[in-house]
Image (cartoon, rainbow, N blue to C red):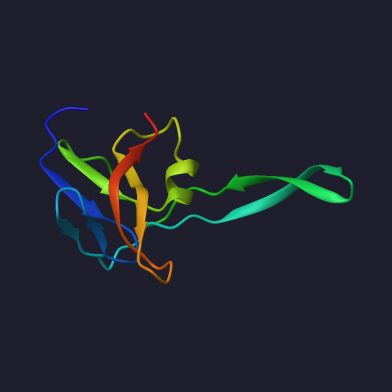
Length: 109
């Protein structure tokens, strides 16, 4: 990854990077993905499930120097397909357990 000039938040909520103290406001274009479940097996009556993801909607084409913040579900669905997608990592929570930010971003690269 080189020459990142812009990060665009494609989630439905604001993202705060507590390390760099950067806010990434939610846009009106949230990238979303749906999935179906396939039961592969059961163990002691408990299903072992595989998620089969649809193609995401609301995901723009790659743009040179731009990273897109997406949900972990979208990131997982696009594993091996795109290297410009990031998702909040090391989530920081308040005393009630509510997420208030992240300490970095993860990438499927």
